[in-house]
Image (cartoon, rainbow, N blue to C red; front, side, top):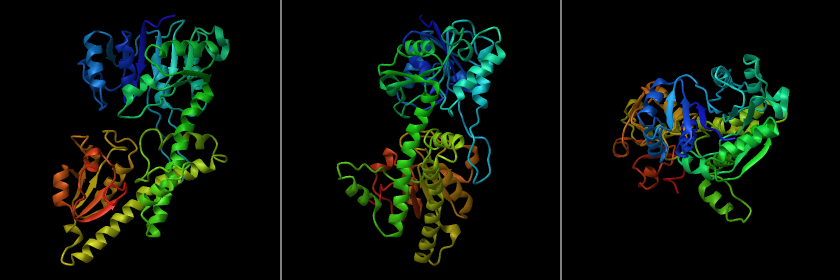
Amino acid sequence: MSFGTVSVIGLGYIGLPTAAMFASCKKNVIGVDVNQNAVDTINRGEIHIVEPELDVIVQAAVQNGFLKAVIKPEPADAFLIAVPTPFLPCYFGEIPQPDLSYIKSACEGIASVLKRGDLVILESTSPVGTTEKVAEWLAEIRRDLSFPQHKGEYADINIAHCPERVLPGHVVRELVINDRVIGGMSSRCSERSVELYKTFVLGDCVITNARTAEMAKLTENSCRDVQIAFANELSIICDKLDIDVWELISLANRHPRINILQPGPGVGGHCIAVDPWFIVSKTPDEAKLIYTARIVNDSKPTWVIDKVKLAISEYLQLEPTKTVKDVIIACYGLAFKPDIDDLRESPALSISAEIALLHRGVTLAVEPNIENLPSSLDNLKLVDLSTAYTTANIHVMLVDHKQFRFSDSPQGIIVDTKGIWTK
């Protein structure tokens, strides 16, 4: 069966590129988003996010009539849900619990336009069991249709989970070449999902069940989080022992079976900093290592801020006629990783905001990938690299953007969490 019309619910960093790829293959694509500005921007053939190559694809898809964006879902043959899965509010020390309200809202939105033979795929990274919840939510609303949990292969509606596995800044390429893990609630669900993704996916589409597919994505990012936690903990140990951690890791990695990652100011983004908690929230007594890695990585920004406080004291000792208000601090990088504009769950952003809040002097921010700071960061002043170099007394390297990697180290006291200036 061919899918004449594909609907993508959520037009963010994953949903919009996915919609664009289907549209580039001459599928009629209906993108759905609650953000009117995003909808209007896309319908002009423009994009509201930063992702290389995506602007050209979206422009062509809109101009050729294969992609449109709307606020409310419309009938389609396949629905891909790509909405956020953030945390519920929690107190310090509590295990964060996933907020599935965005997924449930998406289900409520598409339920009224579902028809027999439709395929629903959950792409949002989710705790184990969420795909089954999607099927339950839809079944509660559409009692006139049958679903896999009741009719298996013979259900009117097919449901599967297929998590995205792409790297920001390389999404367009990786959507095409990366393998996909597809977990259907029945064999029929999986087979139809493979058929849909093979519209543009050149990588393998590997079939499993829904729960394993959900756990696969969480496992990938939890593994990465544990590896980063080792590097971050090592950097703290080396600082105490007066050892250059980057030289140490370089030497250790000369062993043919060792590949230690590079430390940083913490872990950010919408995946690695989030997904391990989905495992911990389901199995808190068993996920001891994963939990510890989260604590190590979440505590690293506090360690960085303490280093900045020491740098302020050092500067005032060197310049006894100065006061704290005279000290200018520059924070380099706000995104959660190099060479992108994505600030979600960014430790660099939280560190910069905390420094600006605590410091009585001026705090500058250098982020070459954004033009304006979020309104919540009114204590920070966004400047260019040259201004920061010539103005600041303390320089805090947080994200190794390419503009910083190819620059000489600045004059002043340096707090380098990425080893760019201290190597």
